[in-house]
Length: 491
Image (cartoon, rainbow, N blue to C red; front, top):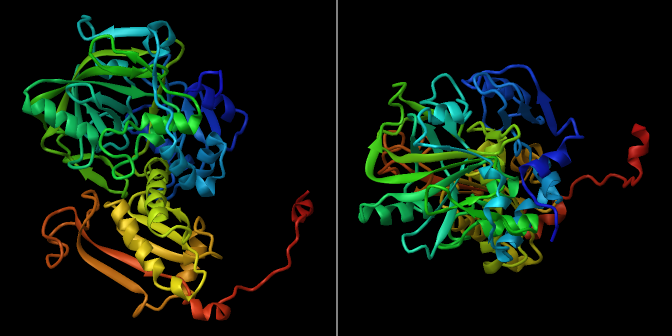
Protein backbone atom coordinates (compact mmCIF):
# COMPACT_ATOMS: atom_id res chain seq x y z
CA UNK A 1 0.00 0.00 0.00
CA UNK A 2 1.07 3.59 -0.66
CA UNK A 3 2.81 5.47 2.17
CA UNK A 4 1.52 8.86 0.99
CA UNK A 5 -1.86 9.71 2.45
CA UNK A 6 -4.65 9.44 -0.10
CA UNK A 7 -7.38 12.09 -0.10
CA UNK A 8 -9.17 14.58 -2.35
CA UNK A 9 -6.13 16.84 -2.59
CA UNK A 10 -3.82 14.04 -3.70
CA UNK A 11 -6.34 13.08 -6.40
CA UNK A 12 -6.59 16.68 -7.65
CA UNK A 13 -2.80 16.93 -7.78
CA UNK A 14 -2.83 14.12 -10.35
CA UNK A 15 -5.51 15.82 -12.47
CA UNK A 16 -4.19 19.39 -12.45
CA UNK A 17 -1.85 19.00 -15.40
CA UNK A 18 -4.63 17.77 -17.69
CA UNK A 19 -6.83 20.70 -18.86
CA UNK A 20 -9.34 18.26 -20.33
CA UNK A 21 -9.97 16.89 -16.84
CA UNK A 22 -9.52 19.86 -14.48
CA UNK A 23 -10.01 23.63 -14.64
CA UNK A 24 -9.82 26.40 -12.03
CA UNK A 25 -11.37 29.85 -12.22
CA UNK A 26 -10.95 32.98 -10.11
CA UNK A 27 -14.02 34.67 -11.60
CA UNK A 28 -16.57 35.36 -8.85
CA UNK A 29 -19.58 33.05 -8.87
CA UNK A 30 -22.76 33.06 -6.81
CA UNK A 31 -23.46 29.71 -5.14
CA UNK A 32 -27.19 30.40 -5.42
CA UNK A 33 -27.97 28.63 -8.70
CA UNK A 34 -25.30 30.47 -10.75
CA UNK A 35 -22.47 28.03 -10.00
CA UNK A 36 -24.53 25.02 -11.10
CA UNK A 37 -25.89 27.06 -14.02
CA UNK A 38 -22.36 27.71 -15.24
CA UNK A 39 -21.24 24.10 -14.91
CA UNK A 40 -24.37 22.90 -16.69
CA UNK A 41 -22.81 24.19 -19.93
CA UNK A 42 -19.22 23.13 -19.20
CA UNK A 43 -19.38 19.56 -18.01
CA UNK A 44 -22.56 18.37 -16.28
CA UNK A 45 -23.76 15.81 -18.85
CA UNK A 46 -26.10 13.10 -17.57
CA UNK A 47 -29.83 13.85 -17.77
CA UNK A 48 -29.30 17.61 -17.38
CA UNK A 49 -31.34 19.79 -19.76
CA UNK A 50 -29.46 20.38 -23.01
CA UNK A 51 -27.16 22.08 -23.92
CA UNK A 52 -24.66 20.30 -21.74
CA UNK A 53 -21.57 18.19 -22.36
CA UNK A 54 -18.79 16.15 -20.85
CA UNK A 55 -16.09 18.53 -19.65
CA UNK A 56 -13.45 19.07 -16.96
CA UNK A 57 -14.05 19.11 -13.23
CA UNK A 58 -14.14 22.74 -12.07
CA UNK A 59 -12.77 24.47 -9.01
CA UNK A 60 -14.39 27.83 -8.25
CA UNK A 61 -11.88 29.82 -6.18
CA UNK A 62 -13.96 32.98 -5.75
CA UNK A 63 -17.34 32.10 -4.24
CA UNK A 64 -19.62 35.00 -3.34
CA UNK A 65 -20.15 35.24 0.41
CA UNK A 66 -17.50 32.66 1.29
CA UNK A 67 -13.97 34.16 1.25
CA UNK A 68 -11.12 31.61 1.29
CA UNK A 69 -13.51 28.75 0.50
CA UNK A 70 -13.38 26.85 -2.79
CA UNK A 71 -16.19 24.87 -4.42
CA UNK A 72 -15.40 21.78 -6.51
CA UNK A 73 -17.99 20.39 -8.91
CA UNK A 74 -17.93 17.65 -11.53
CA UNK A 75 -15.05 15.59 -10.18
CA UNK A 76 -16.78 12.34 -11.17
CA UNK A 77 -18.81 13.74 -14.09
CA UNK A 78 -16.88 11.67 -16.61
CA UNK A 79 -16.42 7.92 -16.62
CA UNK A 80 -13.06 8.38 -18.32
CA UNK A 81 -11.98 10.72 -15.52
CA UNK A 82 -13.04 8.17 -12.91
CA UNK A 83 -10.95 5.56 -14.70
CA UNK A 84 -8.00 7.95 -14.73
CA UNK A 85 -8.35 8.65 -11.00
CA UNK A 86 -8.63 4.93 -10.18
CA UNK A 87 -5.82 4.04 -12.65
CA UNK A 88 -8.19 1.58 -14.35
CA UNK A 89 -9.75 1.03 -17.78
CA UNK A 90 -12.95 3.07 -17.66
CA UNK A 91 -15.00 0.53 -19.65
CA UNK A 92 -14.57 -2.17 -16.97
CA UNK A 93 -14.93 -0.13 -13.78
CA UNK A 94 -17.88 -2.26 -12.69
CA UNK A 95 -15.68 -5.36 -12.71
CA UNK A 96 -13.00 -3.48 -10.77
CA UNK A 97 -15.43 -2.41 -8.06
CA UNK A 98 -16.81 -5.94 -7.85
CA UNK A 99 -13.30 -7.10 -6.92
CA UNK A 100 -13.05 -4.30 -4.34
CA UNK A 101 -16.24 -5.46 -2.60
CA UNK A 102 -14.82 -8.98 -2.35
CA UNK A 103 -11.47 -7.79 -0.97
CA UNK A 104 -12.20 -4.91 1.41
CA UNK A 105 -9.54 -2.89 3.21
CA UNK A 106 -11.23 -1.82 6.43
CA UNK A 107 -10.90 1.72 7.86
CA UNK A 108 -8.47 2.51 10.66
CA UNK A 109 -8.58 4.92 13.60
CA UNK A 110 -6.01 7.72 13.82
CA UNK A 111 -5.10 10.28 16.46
CA UNK A 112 -6.41 13.85 16.48
CA UNK A 113 -3.09 15.23 15.18
CA UNK A 114 -3.52 13.10 12.03
CA UNK A 115 -6.92 14.61 11.18
CA UNK A 116 -6.67 17.72 8.98
CA UNK A 117 -10.48 17.79 8.93
CA UNK A 118 -10.31 19.20 12.47
CA UNK A 119 -7.83 22.02 11.83
CA UNK A 120 -10.57 24.65 12.28
CA UNK A 121 -13.47 24.05 14.67
CA UNK A 122 -16.78 25.93 14.95
CA UNK A 123 -19.09 24.77 17.74
CA UNK A 124 -22.83 25.32 17.88
CA UNK A 125 -22.29 26.99 21.27
CA UNK A 126 -20.32 29.80 19.58
CA UNK A 127 -22.30 33.07 19.59
CA UNK A 128 -22.17 33.56 15.80
CA UNK A 129 -22.55 29.90 14.75
CA UNK A 130 -24.57 29.50 11.54
CA UNK A 131 -24.07 26.60 9.13
CA UNK A 132 -25.45 28.73 6.27
CA UNK A 133 -22.45 31.06 6.65
CA UNK A 134 -19.89 28.31 7.28
CA UNK A 135 -20.84 25.74 4.60
CA UNK A 136 -20.78 26.97 0.98
CA UNK A 137 -23.53 24.61 -0.13
CA UNK A 138 -24.86 25.69 -3.56
CA UNK A 139 -28.38 25.54 -4.91
CA UNK A 140 -28.81 23.79 -8.26
CA UNK A 141 -31.71 25.94 -9.50
CA UNK A 142 -33.68 29.02 -8.36
CA UNK A 143 -36.54 26.67 -7.37
CA UNK A 144 -34.48 24.62 -4.89
CA UNK A 145 -35.77 24.35 -1.33
CA UNK A 146 -32.46 25.77 -0.11
CA UNK A 147 -28.71 25.19 -0.20
CA UNK A 148 -28.06 21.45 -0.51
CA UNK A 149 -25.25 19.19 0.61
CA UNK A 150 -25.33 16.84 -2.36
CA UNK A 151 -22.25 14.70 -1.82
CA UNK A 152 -21.95 14.53 1.94
CA UNK A 153 -21.13 11.07 3.27
CA UNK A 154 -23.15 10.37 6.41
CA UNK A 155 -21.39 8.09 8.88
CA UNK A 156 -23.41 6.49 11.67
CA UNK A 157 -23.74 3.37 13.81
CA UNK A 158 -26.40 1.30 15.49
CA UNK A 159 -27.05 1.84 19.19
CA UNK A 160 -24.60 -0.72 20.54
CA UNK A 161 -21.89 0.37 18.05
CA UNK A 162 -21.61 -3.15 16.65
CA UNK A 163 -22.37 -1.95 13.11
CA UNK A 164 -21.54 1.24 11.24
CA UNK A 165 -22.18 2.45 7.73
CA UNK A 166 -21.79 5.31 5.27
CA UNK A 167 -24.45 6.59 2.86
CA UNK A 168 -25.13 9.66 0.72
CA UNK A 169 -28.42 11.56 1.00
CA UNK A 170 -29.80 14.90 -0.11
CA UNK A 171 -29.54 17.31 2.81
CA UNK A 172 -30.87 20.87 2.85
CA UNK A 173 -29.69 23.64 5.17
CA UNK A 174 -32.87 24.73 6.96
CA UNK A 175 -31.56 26.99 9.76
CA UNK A 176 -28.46 28.07 11.62
CA UNK A 177 -28.02 24.61 13.20
CA UNK A 178 -30.67 22.52 11.47
CA UNK A 179 -30.48 20.28 8.38
CA UNK A 180 -33.28 18.32 6.72
CA UNK A 181 -32.20 14.88 5.48
CA UNK A 182 -34.11 12.66 3.05
CA UNK A 183 -33.52 8.98 3.85
CA UNK A 184 -35.26 6.94 1.17
CA UNK A 185 -37.44 4.26 2.79
CA UNK A 186 -36.05 0.72 2.66
CA UNK A 187 -32.57 -0.61 2.02
CA UNK A 188 -30.40 2.11 3.59
CA UNK A 189 -28.44 1.02 6.65
CA UNK A 190 -28.37 4.52 8.15
CA UNK A 191 -32.16 4.55 7.96
CA UNK A 192 -32.33 1.27 9.89
CA UNK A 193 -30.01 2.68 12.55
CA UNK A 194 -32.12 5.85 12.79
CA UNK A 195 -35.28 3.78 13.26
CA UNK A 196 -33.61 1.95 16.14
CA UNK A 197 -32.74 5.25 17.85
CA UNK A 198 -36.20 6.68 17.18
CA UNK A 199 -37.94 3.70 18.78
CA UNK A 200 -35.80 4.35 21.87
CA UNK A 201 -36.58 8.11 21.58
CA UNK A 202 -32.87 8.93 21.52
CA UNK A 203 -30.92 11.21 19.15
CA UNK A 204 -28.57 9.36 16.79
CA UNK A 205 -25.00 10.73 16.58
CA UNK A 206 -23.65 11.13 13.05
CA UNK A 207 -20.99 12.94 11.08
CA UNK A 208 -21.44 14.40 7.60
CA UNK A 209 -18.17 14.26 5.67
CA UNK A 210 -17.65 16.51 2.62
CA UNK A 211 -14.72 16.91 0.23
CA UNK A 212 -13.60 13.32 -0.20
CA UNK A 213 -11.64 11.28 -2.70
CA UNK A 214 -13.79 9.46 -5.29
CA UNK A 215 -13.01 6.02 -3.85
CA UNK A 216 -15.06 6.98 -0.81
CA UNK A 217 -17.91 8.77 -2.60
CA UNK A 218 -18.34 6.01 -5.20
CA UNK A 219 -17.72 3.16 -2.76
CA UNK A 220 -20.29 4.57 -0.33
CA UNK A 221 -23.15 4.11 -2.81
CA UNK A 222 -23.18 0.30 -2.77
CA UNK A 223 -26.44 -1.18 -1.52
CA UNK A 224 -27.83 -4.60 -0.52
CA UNK A 225 -27.55 -7.36 -1.52
CA UNK A 226 -23.98 -6.61 -2.63
CA UNK A 227 -23.13 -4.98 0.69
CA UNK A 228 -25.49 -6.53 3.24
CA UNK A 229 -26.64 -4.97 6.50
CA UNK A 230 -23.58 -4.36 8.67
CA UNK A 231 -21.11 -4.11 5.79
CA UNK A 232 -19.32 -0.75 6.03
CA UNK A 233 -18.62 0.47 2.49
CA UNK A 234 -15.49 2.31 3.63
CA UNK A 235 -13.90 -1.12 3.18
CA UNK A 236 -14.69 -0.89 -0.55
CA UNK A 237 -13.06 2.56 -0.66
CA UNK A 238 -9.96 1.17 1.04
CA UNK A 239 -9.70 -1.59 -1.56
CA UNK A 240 -10.10 0.84 -4.48
CA UNK A 241 -7.38 3.17 -3.23
CA UNK A 242 -5.32 0.34 -1.64
CA UNK A 243 -5.11 2.33 1.57
CA UNK A 244 -7.35 2.23 4.62
CA UNK A 245 -9.64 5.22 5.18
CA UNK A 246 -8.53 7.16 8.27
CA UNK A 247 -11.20 7.76 10.92
CA UNK A 248 -11.01 10.09 13.91
CA UNK A 249 -13.24 10.50 16.95
CA UNK A 250 -15.86 13.25 16.70
CA UNK A 251 -15.38 16.34 18.85
CA UNK A 252 -18.99 16.84 19.98
CA UNK A 253 -20.65 13.48 19.19
CA UNK A 254 -19.86 9.86 19.97
CA UNK A 255 -19.19 8.93 16.36
CA UNK A 256 -16.25 8.70 13.97
CA UNK A 257 -15.45 11.20 11.22
CA UNK A 258 -13.37 10.77 8.07
CA UNK A 259 -10.09 12.31 9.14
CA UNK A 260 -8.96 13.65 5.77
CA UNK A 261 -12.22 15.20 4.61
CA UNK A 262 -12.34 18.90 3.78
CA UNK A 263 -15.41 19.56 5.96
CA UNK A 264 -17.10 17.61 8.73
CA UNK A 265 -20.48 18.44 10.24
CA UNK A 266 -21.25 16.76 13.55
CA UNK A 267 -24.72 16.38 14.96
CA UNK A 268 -27.70 14.19 15.78
CA UNK A 269 -30.63 12.80 13.79
CA UNK A 270 -33.43 13.84 16.14
CA UNK A 271 -36.04 11.25 17.10
CA UNK A 272 -39.68 11.85 16.25
CA UNK A 273 -38.97 15.26 14.73
CA UNK A 274 -39.76 16.18 11.12
CA UNK A 275 -39.48 19.32 8.99
CA UNK A 276 -41.06 20.50 5.72
CA UNK A 277 -38.28 20.42 3.09
CA UNK A 278 -39.22 23.74 1.48
CA UNK A 279 -40.15 25.50 4.71
CA UNK A 280 -38.02 28.51 3.72
CA UNK A 281 -39.03 28.79 0.04
CA UNK A 282 -42.48 27.19 -0.36
CA UNK A 283 -41.67 26.38 -4.00
CA UNK A 284 -43.01 22.84 -3.70
CA UNK A 285 -39.67 21.66 -5.10
CA UNK A 286 -36.65 20.03 -3.49
CA UNK A 287 -33.79 19.95 -6.03
CA UNK A 288 -33.17 18.35 -9.44
CA UNK A 289 -32.84 14.58 -9.07
CA UNK A 290 -31.10 12.01 -11.24
CA UNK A 291 -34.02 11.32 -13.66
CA UNK A 292 -33.72 14.96 -14.81
CA UNK A 293 -36.77 16.40 -13.05
CA UNK A 294 -37.15 18.55 -9.95
CA UNK A 295 -37.90 16.39 -6.96
CA UNK A 296 -41.04 17.25 -5.00
CA UNK A 297 -40.41 18.84 -1.61
CA UNK A 298 -40.89 16.26 1.11
CA UNK A 299 -43.41 17.34 3.76
CA UNK A 300 -41.65 15.48 6.57
CA UNK A 301 -37.87 15.21 6.38
CA UNK A 302 -35.90 13.85 9.30
CA UNK A 303 -33.98 16.53 11.17
CA UNK A 304 -30.26 16.79 11.94
CA UNK A 305 -29.31 19.07 14.82
CA UNK A 306 -25.77 20.27 14.06
CA UNK A 307 -23.36 20.54 16.99
CA UNK A 308 -20.15 21.49 15.17
CA UNK A 309 -18.61 22.31 11.79
CA UNK A 310 -14.92 21.55 11.25
CA UNK A 311 -12.76 22.08 8.19
CA UNK A 312 -9.24 22.35 6.87
CA UNK A 313 -7.35 25.58 7.41
CA UNK A 314 -5.92 26.09 3.91
CA UNK A 315 -8.75 27.08 1.53
CA UNK A 316 -11.15 24.23 2.37
CA UNK A 317 -12.97 22.63 -0.55
CA UNK A 318 -16.74 22.37 -0.54
CA UNK A 319 -17.60 19.54 -2.94
CA UNK A 320 -20.93 19.53 -4.77
CA UNK A 321 -22.74 17.74 -7.59
CA UNK A 322 -25.57 18.67 -9.92
CA UNK A 323 -28.37 16.22 -9.14
CA UNK A 324 -29.02 14.86 -12.66
CA UNK A 325 -25.42 15.17 -13.87
CA UNK A 326 -23.01 12.52 -15.13
CA UNK A 327 -21.48 12.66 -11.65
CA UNK A 328 -24.53 10.89 -10.25
CA UNK A 329 -24.16 8.30 -13.01
CA UNK A 330 -20.63 7.54 -11.80
CA UNK A 331 -21.57 7.38 -8.14
CA UNK A 332 -24.72 5.29 -8.59
CA UNK A 333 -24.11 3.50 -11.88
CA UNK A 334 -20.64 2.00 -11.47
CA UNK A 335 -21.45 0.31 -8.13
CA UNK A 336 -24.70 -0.96 -9.66
CA UNK A 337 -22.72 -2.50 -12.51
CA UNK A 338 -20.52 -4.21 -9.91
CA UNK A 339 -23.60 -5.49 -8.06
CA UNK A 340 -25.08 -6.94 -11.23
CA UNK A 341 -21.78 -8.56 -12.23
CA UNK A 342 -21.43 -10.14 -8.78
CA UNK A 343 -24.86 -11.78 -8.77
CA UNK A 344 -24.77 -12.85 -12.42
CA UNK A 345 -21.29 -14.35 -12.12
CA UNK A 346 -22.48 -16.51 -9.26
CA UNK A 347 -25.53 -17.80 -11.11
CA UNK A 348 -24.32 -18.06 -14.74
CA UNK A 349 -20.53 -17.60 -14.70
CA UNK A 350 -18.87 -16.43 -17.89
CA UNK A 351 -22.08 -15.54 -19.75
CA UNK A 352 -22.15 -11.80 -19.04
CA UNK A 353 -18.97 -10.21 -20.39
CA UNK A 354 -19.59 -6.67 -19.18
CA UNK A 355 -22.30 -4.35 -17.84
CA UNK A 356 -22.81 -0.62 -18.36
CA UNK A 357 -25.31 1.75 -16.73
CA UNK A 358 -25.56 4.70 -19.15
CA UNK A 359 -26.31 8.36 -18.41
CA UNK A 360 -29.73 8.03 -20.05
CA UNK A 361 -30.86 6.07 -16.98
CA UNK A 362 -29.12 8.31 -14.47
CA UNK A 363 -26.96 5.38 -13.41
CA UNK A 364 -29.90 3.58 -11.78
CA UNK A 365 -32.78 3.02 -14.21
CA UNK A 366 -31.04 1.32 -17.18
CA UNK A 367 -28.34 -1.26 -17.74
CA UNK A 368 -26.80 -2.70 -20.90
CA UNK A 369 -25.49 -6.26 -20.66
CA UNK A 370 -22.96 -7.78 -23.06
CA UNK A 371 -23.72 -11.48 -23.51
CA UNK A 372 -21.46 -14.39 -24.45
CA UNK A 373 -23.20 -17.31 -26.20
CA UNK A 374 -20.86 -20.25 -26.68
CA UNK A 375 -23.25 -22.91 -27.94
CA UNK A 376 -26.94 -23.60 -28.48
CA UNK A 377 -27.41 -24.40 -24.79
CA UNK A 378 -26.71 -20.70 -24.06
CA UNK A 379 -29.70 -19.50 -26.07
CA UNK A 380 -32.13 -17.97 -23.60
CA UNK A 381 -29.49 -17.48 -20.93
CA UNK A 382 -29.43 -13.79 -21.83
CA UNK A 383 -32.99 -13.30 -20.59
CA UNK A 384 -32.20 -15.08 -17.36
CA UNK A 385 -29.29 -12.65 -16.95
CA UNK A 386 -31.75 -9.76 -17.28
CA UNK A 387 -33.94 -11.21 -14.53
CA UNK A 388 -30.87 -11.56 -12.31
CA UNK A 389 -30.05 -7.91 -12.93
CA UNK A 390 -33.48 -6.91 -11.65
CA UNK A 391 -32.87 -9.08 -8.58
CA UNK A 392 -29.50 -7.47 -7.94
CA UNK A 393 -30.88 -3.95 -8.06
CA UNK A 394 -34.59 -3.34 -7.53
CA UNK A 395 -34.42 0.26 -8.81
CA UNK A 396 -33.45 -0.95 -12.29
CA UNK A 397 -36.19 -0.37 -14.88
CA UNK A 398 -34.77 -1.25 -18.33
CA UNK A 399 -32.29 -3.91 -19.46
CA UNK A 400 -30.86 -4.01 -22.99
CA UNK A 401 -29.08 -7.21 -24.04
CA UNK A 402 -26.41 -7.12 -26.77
CA UNK A 403 -23.77 -9.38 -28.30
CA UNK A 404 -20.02 -9.30 -27.71
CA UNK A 405 -19.28 -7.33 -30.89
CA UNK A 406 -21.25 -4.32 -29.59
CA UNK A 407 -19.53 -1.52 -27.64
CA UNK A 408 -21.89 -1.14 -24.67
CA UNK A 409 -20.40 2.25 -23.78
CA UNK A 410 -21.41 3.63 -27.21
CA UNK A 411 -25.16 4.28 -27.31
CA UNK A 412 -25.08 4.57 -31.11
CA UNK A 413 -23.76 1.02 -31.28
CA UNK A 414 -26.41 -0.15 -28.81
CA UNK A 415 -29.25 1.49 -30.76
CA UNK A 416 -27.81 0.03 -33.98
CA UNK A 417 -28.29 -3.38 -32.38
CA UNK A 418 -31.96 -2.65 -31.70
CA UNK A 419 -32.44 -1.59 -35.29
CA UNK A 420 -30.74 -4.60 -36.91
CA UNK A 421 -30.92 -7.48 -34.42
CA UNK A 422 -34.31 -6.98 -32.85
CA UNK A 423 -37.98 -7.59 -33.64
CA UNK A 424 -40.43 -5.90 -31.30
CA UNK A 425 -43.07 -8.65 -31.46
CA UNK A 426 -40.71 -11.31 -30.09
CA UNK A 427 -37.70 -9.64 -28.45
CA UNK A 428 -39.43 -7.60 -25.73
CA UNK A 429 -40.23 -8.79 -22.22
CA UNK A 430 -42.50 -6.62 -20.03
CA UNK A 431 -42.70 -7.36 -16.31
CA UNK A 432 -45.58 -5.35 -14.76
CA UNK A 433 -46.26 -4.47 -11.15
CA UNK A 434 -42.70 -4.49 -9.83
CA UNK A 435 -40.95 -2.23 -7.34
CA UNK A 436 -38.74 0.55 -8.64
CA UNK A 437 -37.45 4.04 -7.79
CA UNK A 438 -40.01 6.59 -6.47
CA UNK A 439 -38.20 9.51 -8.17
CA UNK A 440 -39.29 8.31 -11.63
CA UNK A 441 -42.29 10.61 -12.26
CA UNK A 442 -44.03 8.05 -14.47
CA UNK A 443 -44.34 5.64 -11.56
CA UNK A 444 -47.60 6.88 -10.12
CA UNK A 445 -51.05 5.23 -10.16
CA UNK A 446 -52.68 7.89 -12.33
CA UNK A 447 -50.10 7.19 -15.08
CA UNK A 448 -50.81 3.43 -15.25
CA UNK A 449 -53.61 2.39 -12.86
CA UNK A 450 -53.70 -1.20 -14.11
CA UNK A 451 -50.10 -1.96 -13.01
CA UNK A 452 -49.15 0.73 -10.48
CA UNK A 453 -51.00 0.44 -7.19
CA UNK A 454 -48.68 2.71 -5.21
CA UNK A 455 -46.06 5.27 -6.21
CA UNK A 456 -42.68 3.68 -6.83
CA UNK A 457 -44.02 0.67 -8.74
CA UNK A 458 -43.20 0.12 -12.39
CA UNK A 459 -43.46 -2.13 -15.41
CA UNK A 460 -39.94 -3.27 -16.22
CA UNK A 461 -38.59 -3.83 -19.71
CA UNK A 462 -36.11 -6.23 -21.30
CA UNK A 463 -34.99 -5.53 -24.88
CA UNK A 464 -33.20 -8.57 -26.26
CA UNK A 465 -30.87 -7.38 -29.02
CA UNK A 466 -28.80 -10.56 -29.15
CA UNK A 467 -28.66 -12.68 -32.29
CA UNK A 468 -30.09 -16.23 -31.96
CA UNK A 469 -27.11 -18.58 -31.65
CA UNK A 470 -28.03 -20.62 -34.72
CA UNK A 471 -28.13 -17.44 -36.88
CA UNK A 472 -24.84 -15.85 -35.79
CA UNK A 473 -23.16 -16.31 -39.18
CA UNK A 474 -25.88 -14.16 -40.79
CA UNK A 475 -25.14 -11.17 -38.56
CA UNK A 476 -21.38 -10.78 -38.85
CA UNK A 477 -20.35 -7.12 -39.02
CA UNK A 478 -18.33 -5.88 -41.99
CA UNK A 479 -14.70 -6.78 -41.33
CA UNK A 480 -12.24 -3.93 -41.94
CA UNK A 481 -8.51 -4.34 -42.25
CA UNK A 482 -6.67 -4.14 -38.92
CA UNK A 483 -4.14 -1.29 -38.96
CA UNK A 484 -2.15 -1.22 -35.73
CA UNK A 485 -0.24 2.00 -36.42
CA UNK A 486 -3.23 4.09 -37.56
CA UNK A 487 -2.38 6.92 -35.17
CA UNK A 488 0.69 7.91 -37.20
CA UNK A 489 -1.64 9.39 -39.82
CA UNK A 490 -2.79 11.97 -37.27
CA UNK A 491 0.71 13.25 -36.51
